[in-house]
Image (cartoon, rainbow, N blue to C red; front, side, top):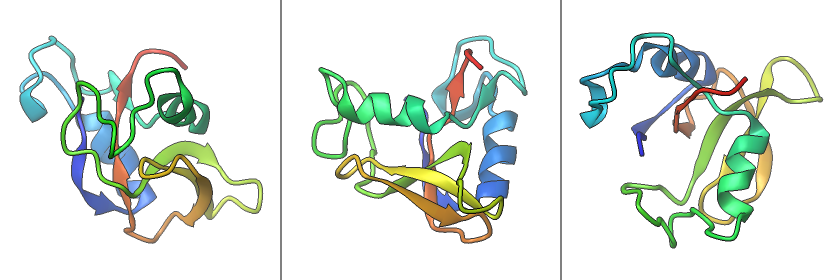
Length: 112
């Protein structure tokens, strides 16, 4: 898995995710800038609630998972200055201010 092992604000997380490419973070998949993106809230929730839950205490094949919140691409219903985030510590979902550099990043490839 590809994790950003430092926290970013939401805007920087979007930019960083879209810039990930082959050769970054140990990737050797032939990907180019623009192939990767922030996951949706639902995609992150599936990781934490599936039959093989991926959380900081049960990382499966992944490394460096933090027991903290990770940004999703989903804007919060309370307003466009907030985005939904998912804790990979306990699976809870919250809303974080997009300008706050508090969340980690786990980009995904493919899908929406």
